[in-house]
Length: 222
View 1 (tube, rainbow, N blue to C red):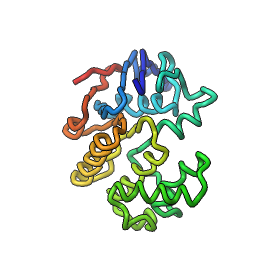
View 2: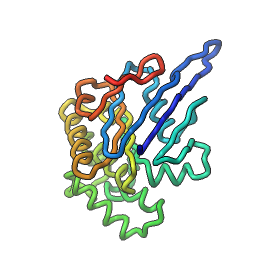
View 3: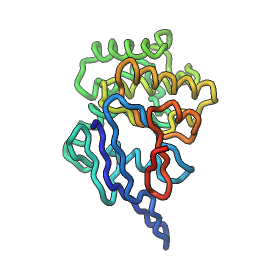
View 4: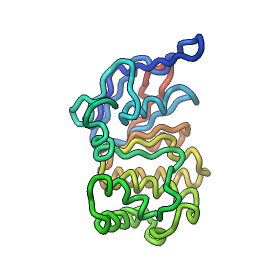
């Protein structure tokens, strides 16, 4: 298994209320799978993804990545996040003052690659995603769909074991949403890239190998 989550629970205290967001959620992801997670707004999908990505801690339960039990406080968590996990969010979070290639090169530079090598790899990834004519463009010169493809390229830069995508098409129109999903499916099939995708779109979720629903704090296979 690339990723295993067992008995994940998360509770928030809001004023005088206790809100249970996750209540014993379990998930197993095999290498090369594309998994989708759906559920009503506010049900805890993003919270779950942040815990899986070591950006947040659960109150109970365990997370294992490639057989290693980890959490956000683990000494190697920063290294694992940069080398083994790729992140794509609803908002692309591109650095506006950097070109597409420079944005994609950032994780490679953090990992210690020299600038020339990082830039070359970034251009190769962008070309694979059909953005070979946009490598020198800044984010404000790109369409919404192109910006999200750059964000996807950045997530793939360090050849991560798994990509976690949190509503990656939530800000896009239906045509661009389908395009991004088709790209993820293509990368999954051609490169064997593993994906866990949180989405509100149940129709697009059907493009995954397995689709789960998060309800009442638990994951159910659809």
